[in-house]
Image 1: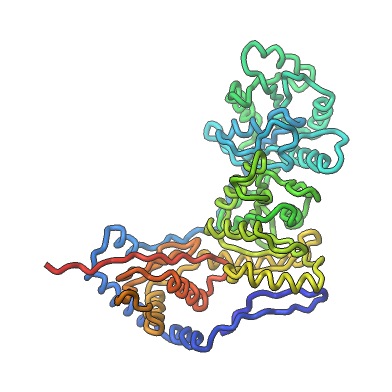
Image 2: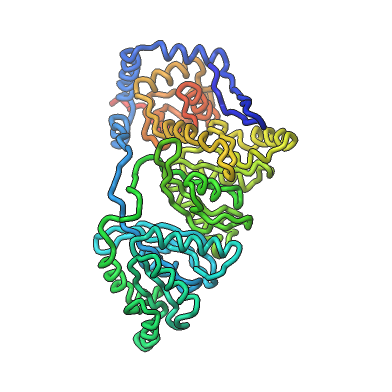
Length: 517
């Protein structure tokens, strides 16, 4: 059996395909398993299962052996939630208000302007009403460079919202920038609620009254830091928000959530923008532009996906500081919410320790895995030779992950992500029937038994798949299996059943024979 590993795109249209050969003896083993009937597989499993009756088993052993997996997850469509956007100039407390509404520290907050750069969506709820809350970067007129991109994201957030919370620093008062934002809001035609932030006690409320001058109606005095007045503000917001959004897409749930992770500046935001077909995320040559995870529903390859762009991980978590520290935590959280991780590499740069650490982070999360090599159109022959050697040496532990070569900036070969994602997710969901699994284990141990250790040879009594996403296997044994032998079992599982793009967990439960009375 020959497995196609990945295609390397050359400068022209030619595709060079690399193959991983399987040993002929392994091929004979696989053919032997394929030739077995379902009845024969189930009979073997029954015999092995009955042999467990001679061993001391615990209650949860029986639950594990008899349990069936619920793999019925599928796409679920829900009504589009109303969208409430929070806008204002830099450092007026927008992200602090987001955290107060959510009831947790989700948005990155630091005591300096410009920490939030993209528009970031969160699911929120108030008095049993669910809605989407959108945090934005500070809006400034006549901004240039990255500040201009940030301001543009705030303007897009207004257009894609059902209502707007306009946050003003009441202790500073209305500024000329605030007045420019008011013109922008009026032109949008969206309902606007004026938020007078940083009113920490009743003595400061006259400061809020001064904001009537903006012409947006009654200012709502709040303290985002202390929570004062936020409940009344949300009551006012619910009064103007529709029950179903007039601007948002239909909500999509199911097994297609994709986290884009990698070092800063490897092209995660460019990939998201190209997939969405618009400037969804701020892209700039300045590394670390993205600070918060950005969710976006995209149509790629004729299917719906939810892509999550994340902050680039610069250094080990315990060495990160300030906004980078919280961004790293949120990247980890985004990975936990996702089902498949796409790790991006910049092929023009050597694969670094940070790249490998990010791959390991994806592995530890148990998510399906795809490796995307970006900026492929900038790769010359010399760098390519070094890259192939680096992949062989540094990424050998994930040689089972699909690899795609793309250019996020131009969109070249972006469609190749779709089959890679589908293969990885199918493997992540895969379940091997108990009869088939035990036939596999029995054939494997007869062909290659565990080495004798200390005069004893541990045997595998029975095997079951304890879960999927990722696939988890439990082996009931008479003794401890060497780590090397467990890795051997993992390798043969992959050769026999695929599992391309997903980690596999193989655990064991050592059980002693029941003493006869």
